[in-house]
Image 1 (cartoon, one colour):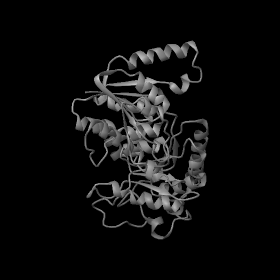
Image 2 (cartoon, helix red, strand yellow):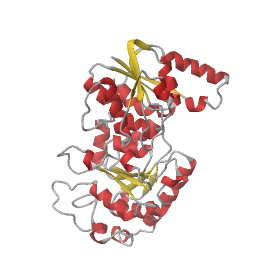
Image 3 (tube, rainbow, N blue to C red):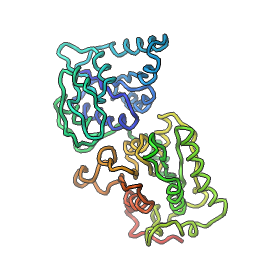
Length: 387
């Protein structure tokens, strides 16, 4: 069975669609899956290509092409894209985007005799939707309006192809063994994902600094990714504030004080018995600006990620890293880590949590969530106080 998935953008939306591939392969062994995606997000699918789970990634640049639709370069690139898209027919073309641009791509794709196009029949809460997606579909599938973004895609494909979903999503972004060994050998780095496409989703700079000081006091190092000039400036500001503490020669104990954490929480080591990670591993580092695939590998080597609602935070979820996702709006139910109610019985403590408050969550709330994402090592009966 040849299947074409159409999910073009954005980064978070593409991440939320990843489990669809593993769902299909589990239900339809031998299925051949192609995926149409914006070129800038194609590197995220490289592991699926390498594993053979996806046969072809068909890249497009609709965002750029529409800025100069009549330019000679645009017409040439569009022609090349259309040729690649129509190189083979499909038994099923599934529009997972629900927009006019994805409907155009789905309509251009060729079908086998008996093949069908599938799409959403209705808008779901908090998601964009445009009617042409159902106009070009042979089968339009209605979904509950209140549904998580990841479950929406999974449900659409399951109903289109007639299979039952497994309770636990598999993103297919398994950490390579070599990277896993590296992370276990040096598990001191926590990535702060502060960048987001919307200013109203950001967390205050002073909160990042306060949280970073507490983590450094526990022996951790803070890594700061960025994807734009503004994000680089923020990363540099956080790093400067955190590294000043090291330059002043403050002890771990003194840096653990006065951070605004309540009671025993300020004394609870993150690293378990001994908590031997020391000043030499502390401080903050600003990562260079990285391509998406390289950035994903860097995140995979971290002990965990704390971040705002952004594509990188969703990648942390896909990598199954300990993760806290920070929300200034009550939308975590739609895009955040799946709540405990969606986890199968016996799955253990959640490794990934969302924190929501208005105008923004407190540092204490984020810290408490972070501690909840880190279960006690088996050999430790209780958390010792910092020296």
